[in-house]
Image (cartoon, rainbow, N blue to C red):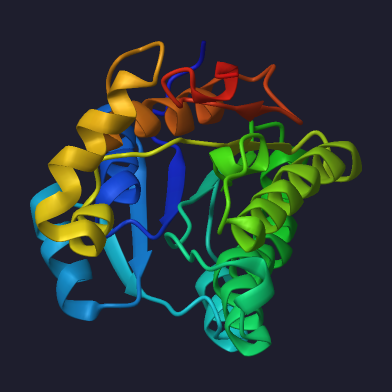
Length: 244
């Protein structure tokens, strides 16, 4: 398996959680890493913690900003770590909230892909390996009540990865579909009940543990490094998709 030494890796959403862990692991493998995020202060703290990563403020709704990010930039591998949960009953969902969730969680990644592919095709045409990795989620395979919007978004991203793998090869396109992961976002959402949530979830998983961001980061970096991986969705979910 190839390493990432001197490769240019762009991590979208790299200021915390899975994205930050992915950026750190890519740097440890020798990559030149750029991270993006909406919150400038958090982004700058992440860059300092990484020690050497470039940090660029970016809103995934800003098409001009996304275009500027890729303008003239050398890039070999792009990893997109998406926004988190949005739960509500299907029959009670406000359509504007559904649209907002699609815009943040699907169209944001789609906009990145539209700009990234052109640069990655240039990389691949020069004989170098190039890849794009989306982040979907376990609800694509294991939907639960209240997660219909997330299931649709995540399934769409996995389908997009397969379609692009066929259309833009030799650029490799894949998706990472994690289950529940111990991130600052989840802890912020569930507060004092987070540890109980993790314990209950772990009891129902074959792996008997909830993933850490580093577990998911290893999957992202593996997909960047493995030149035979394309059109695939990988499920680092502790066995969630195996549950009956």
